[in-house]
Length: 452
Ligand SMILES: Cc1ncc(COP(=O)(O)O)c(C=O)c1O
Image (cartoon, rainbow, N blue to C red; front, side, top):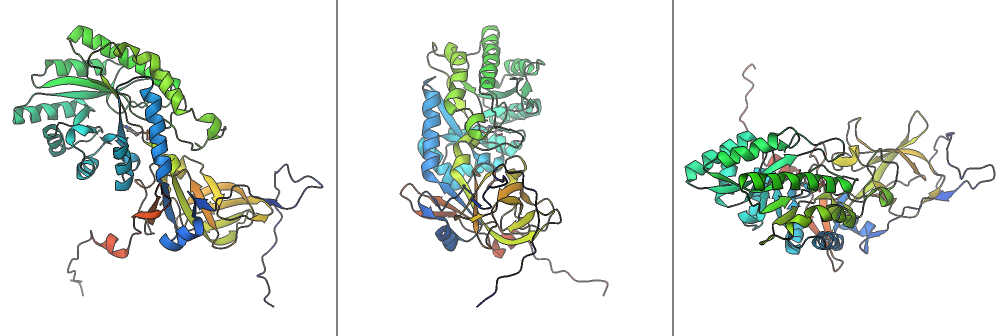
C-alpha cells in the first residue's frame, strides 16, 4: 500500500461566513469549467499543450452582431473599424473583417498587417501618435482615413502633399473632458484649451489639406455610458461651429472605442454583471446627440473603433498548476505555468478563475503565481480555493483583449492559440513558439576573445 505524502498542517483564520461553529468543513468551489464551446479542457491541453489561449468564434461573431445592431438602430450610417492593437491575430482580424468591419490601426506595423490581410487603404483608419513619414506617405497614396494627432504630423502631411502634388482631406483627433477620470489628454488636440480649433484653422489655411472628419476616443473600459453622450455633444457643437464659420461639411464623426467587456476591473466593487453597461446603453447615450446628422444628404458616417468589448469575452487561458508551497504567512501558494508574461492585463483586471474539474475540500486563502523567476509574477494575490491537485487545470477569463498583443516572450516560450470554430472544431491559429523562432532574429558574430 502506498503512503500519502506528508504535508505540514497549518492553522489559518478563514473569514468565511460558512464557517460557523457547526458549519461544514468541506465545500466545493463553484466555478468549474470542464469545456470551452463543448471542447473538453483536458483534450485541448493534450492536443495543444499548456498553457494555451482559446478563442470562441461564436462569441466573437455574436458580440459583433449585437454591437452593430445596437449602434445601427440609433443611426443608419455606421461603420466599425476593428482596433488591431486589441488583438491582431490574423484569424481574429479576418473574422471581424468578414462581419463587415474595416481596420483601425495605430502604427506602421499594424498598417502593414491590415494591408497584408487584403484590406484596401481606404478601408483603414490610421490613428496613433507616431506615424513615420514613409508610412504616412503610403497611407496618403492608398487614400487611408488619417486622423492627425499633432501639428508635427500635419506638417509632415503638407510636405507629402506638396511632394505628391496632391490635395487631400484628413481627420483630426480631439481630446476632451467627458466627465470621466482620468481625462485622456495626451492624444490629439485638446478641445477646451482651443487647440482643436487652432488645428482646424491650420487646415483651413493650408493649400493642400482639407477636413474630412473628427475623431475622439475618450478612454478604455469606460463604465459610464453617459460619458459618450457628453463627448458626442461637445464634438458635435465643435463641428457645427467649424462648419458654420469655416464652410466645412464633414464626412465623418469617429467616436473611437472604449466600451467595457465583462471583465472585473480591480477597485470596482460591483461584479461586471452590474458594473458594466450593456452595449445598447452606450448606443442610447449618443442617440440624441447624433440626431442633427440625420437630415444630411449624404449622411455622414459614424465610425466606432471598439476593441475590447468585441474580443475580450471570447478569450480564455488554460493553465496548469505545476507546484504548491506553503507561504510563511500560512497561505497556500500555487505555481502556474502561465504568468504575467501571458496575461499582461492582470495588473488591472481580476479575472474569473475556474477550475477544470470539480474539487472538494476546505476553501482556503491562496496566491496564484506564474512561472517567471520574478517577484512580480502574480496572477491572483488573494483567492479562496480548495486544495488543488498537482497538474490540475485553471481557466482564466475573459482574456481576449490586449493580452495576445502585449504578451512578452520573457523567460518562457509563448504558447499556442486555438480557435474553437462555429462548428465546434478546435484549430490552432498560432502555434507555440520554439527556440528557432526566437533565435531567428539574432545574428551570429564571429567573436574572438582578443585578450586571451
Ligand atoms: C484610437 C483608439 N481607438 C480604439 C481603441 C480601442 O479601445 P477599446 O479596446 O477600449 O475599445 C483604442 C485603444 O485604446 C485607441 O487608442
